[in-house]
Image 1 (cartoon, rainbow, N blue to C red):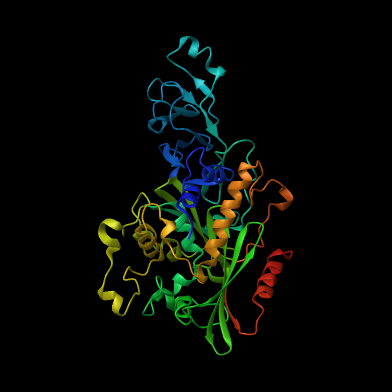
Image 2 (cartoon, rainbow, N blue to C red):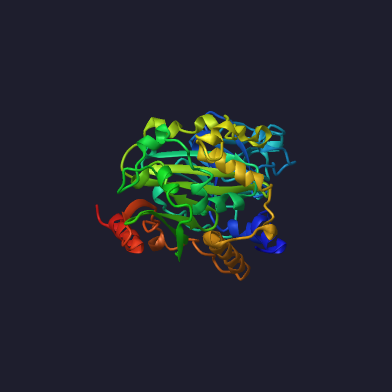
Length: 426
């Protein structure tokens, strides 16, 4: 349990709020590359209560600007993409991707003082099918060279999902290993289960989640956040263990559809304090993703990345299917099942009413890191995982594992062995 004041500290992300200032020290996803077509429209985005406009110019460059024209405040997301920039439809002022004013056509000589000021703009980068922006103070840090951003495009799937709740309660679900044994458990063997096998076993992850409902959970603090070890006893001499990670300040990595070849990423980015975007990335380091995998779950999303199953339709829960098909009755899609429980906790979960137990230790550790990060920012220090040294900009030690092993196995040694192999020269 935390106090109401601490809860507000961790969940309020607008300009000037302690957690908002923390999140602004990092690059944040703001859009998918697929949303910015070369001949498309500008994109209106709200990021931590700040209104932005994102656009791609006729040379393919991406710009992130304050959404309101610095002339008289018109919304630039309605603007025209032409002549090398974004033109406001109110008085025709033209901006390039850096916010420089290229034209003021309603002024004598095209605007004799247009170089005296500019439209507020923000650094941005495009990597791995995602547009990132830095809206914090000072020189932006390095964009971390995560493995999932640097594989070939056909080895990676990216999407996003709107959630009607605060970013934190959604990310805390990622680092809660026990809920896999309940919320996501299937009561029958699905076609997906038949195709997925855990390394070292002929069983699917889903069948192993149900083999031990109270797994052992261990933690390890790292230079990026928290590494989480989850161990389930599945036989007298065998264990099923997984490693997942909380990455400061607002995303997680965990085993997913690509099994040992890669992993999945959920990156939770506040729109405001009661809504957020979850950017979803799945990748394989070894091979292109099958089209079936890339399309799986897309029928659960609308064209604008909202869930088909939502609170208004009670997530289309099927009580009959709860008897012998699905523990939750909310289909077989993890995203919809997660949406039900995180949004059902309220727009901003009141953590002063919760009662944490031993299996919540990763959530406690993540909150402590966030609170420490808030204090670091207040003290003028870079918080954990702000990367400025190019030599430190590698994350092959961000290990994600799903494997069956002998009960006598040293799981930490297995993780270190995997890290060593990932660092070995090709």
